[in-house]
Length: 239
Image (cartoon, rainbow, N blue to C red; front, top):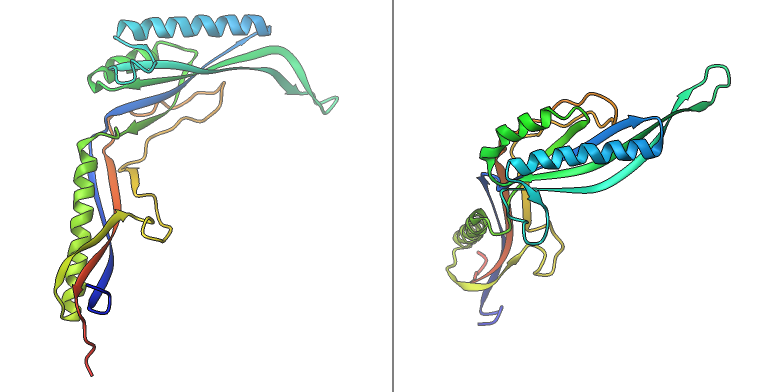
């Protein structure tokens, strides 16, 4: 059938489903002040060793390609130092105080949420550790993705039926189904994850007090958007 023999309906289908997260990622930082850079780095390394020893006792392992889906993993991804400066009222300049901050970024990923309560107690015992924020993640193979994509296709088909009914025609078949933007137009990312609730975050200061984020799992909203082209019988406009 050609376009002259019938009509092509182009439609979009959208859907969203809420699912439990598969993992929690805690973005943490170890921050210690000492009177020299070597002392600060040594103290930060010691604090990191204490932390990873406690995580190991909970069953945690270092993150690697082979441990990505373990119940708990950790990775230390950055180490920085910064010399402290204070404003000198007499000179008007910020002068070195002699103290040095050493900071280490640590990410802890938890996939067994039963461990979250014990983890929270462990982290609270480390005075040099701040939990900046918690991110809840959904795996690429979570069954929720198949569900939301299925619902998006059905939404597109229902929209096509509505258009066909308005035109007084019958649907004959499906020409194309694609992620949004693949049928010739730019569009939104067809794969979206949106948290259903905000997560508390810290103040962001290396040497300040930080409110500990909640470790209660936050449901995640999976969204899918698809485009479809449907064949229908010929539509004659009324005279």
